[in-house]
Length: 388
Image 1 (spheres, one colour):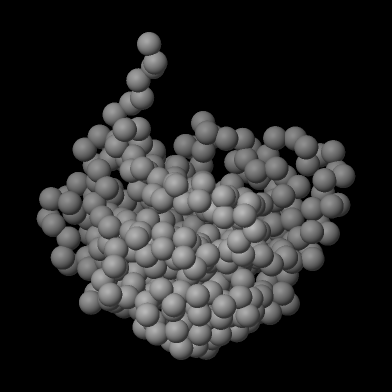
Image 2: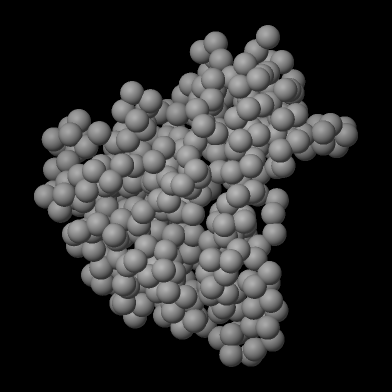
């Protein structure tokens, strides 16, 4: 007999569009020029400081030992310096920081500290799938709130059902938002903090795109807001800002009780990220002032070129003031997965259908600004021919 999987495993949603990977391989084998705007994984180099630090740290035998949850002291110190310089927030790096193997690591482990059978978590829809799956695996019930233009792509906290609020243990928020590119006004963040304090809910604030603000906009840390440390834990990532997706480096900050709970769960799950990579992460954070603005400007230039090209190709596109994406309405009410499949088959362009990130994303597709301006323009022209 084949061992049966658990009911929680069975409740996980299927991976969408799995057949498109096979289709892509066959097309590339036939010499088709495919433009990939799907994954948010830019083909750009990490900071030279991170590369230099990694080369040096790899040669230090002390970095081959277990990191455990304490991690590299230089990485913790760099996190504290970054939070102070960037957000004006003082963090106790001994008790209010958790080094992570990418922010997904922390987001995925958080439910195991706070969710019991019958509890719920409030999750944006569409949203990062690292919110949904772990809640299910921890025995909780996801309550998906559709992010739509009419609610400014915000979770309308006052519209949540009373029974969901009563059973909720975690509220996931992600601003600047992937995939919608929305930003949260200060008044909304303050409302969310008050809502979580009133209902004894953990506020998981995913700020992986903290540095991707354009035209003078600079996203704020939730730790800048009064009362946040009591209820909020904030998740940061080096993946996008520093072009270090495969390095798997991130961190969480928050009040010592919340950080302590996450850290305790992680002690049973892993023994920390390779210390040499943490040393490189410290160097990357140390280059924030000198290196990050230029990298962000690259994405601003790509945003400008992509918005212009997609509009010229007949798409209705809002100009985002944050993130590395465009969130584009699918023309003619075509299902987003059908459009994405046709985009690959007929135009050799990969985009992410909104429905792949949740039913609330239906009607849109996501464009990742991972290629240069010329390729973005070419992709827009190809896709425009699908709507003629």
